[in-house]
Image 1 (cartoon, rainbow, N blue to C red):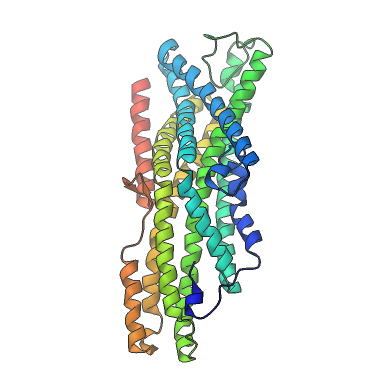
Image 2: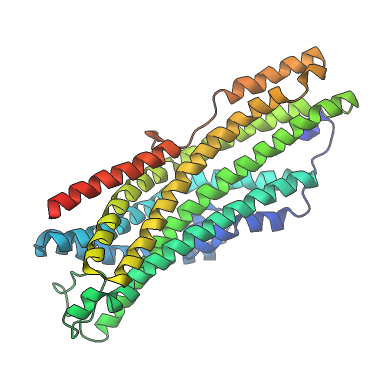
Length: 409
């Protein structure tokens, strides 16, 4: 992250950097490799891996289109019931936004590659065991958040495509000779109830559900890893600031500790802006997706509550919690990024700067100036992600829910 050789010491590598990098990026690899995305955002892959990735990408995108095209045709051309249209609009809109995020990964992979390279460079050059411990602590936090996100998304999503289709109260009241599917609209093309056509379509529906939820979790994992990495780097710089006075008093000033702090903080700011540039479109899609789907899921929960359908209520409630949690974390990490980048200015004031030589104390002003203009995470350079934004999303979803309920009733 900083060329310390210019200040008198040779560049040293973290001997455990390969394991540390693997631990940091492992969750992303698990999520993005099956989608064929990982070789797009991580260039150090073989030609065979790129070929396999292209095949996987094509197959996964086909499964999304297999849901979106027939179901949209059914909603806007064949079905007359408003209730059925609304019931399908939520899952189809989620599939469409997932396809948009999927395409964005493929088109803008170089932005994510640049961020990943920065993370790897920081792991390679960390030297102090305490600093490495701080970085590992924040990696663990990001992994835990990703796991919680994945549990909610996969549990609710796969239950909707499997358990709910066979065990819901609506199914028990309907014609049991018609085998259920999460997405209708295929009768215009072929007989979906015959075997093995039904089994193939059902398998493709489950596969598409896995793709949509993996795309959502993968986007979330990148955001969590990058922002927690920034938090770790800022905490390291704060630790250096707290040790600055002691080093100056002991004449331990080779290399210049303040120069390292300022340079590394500038690098952190650059990295934060690269992260914002990489994530801004995904965050905008996430804001729109969460607002629409939270509104729909609130409507579904109310409808199934009236029908006393316990299976459907549990499924939709799990999905509602999942979407609420996801947008909360996106907004929360935006808030954390802003607060962490301003902490360095506060930390420079809280140390015993009055015990430093006048010239060195004056140099701390630069840190304060930089911290006054911290980078922020935005959704498409339109909406600033913060806890205030989260409350706005929740309020907006409730407003649209009330409008939808009035319109359908």
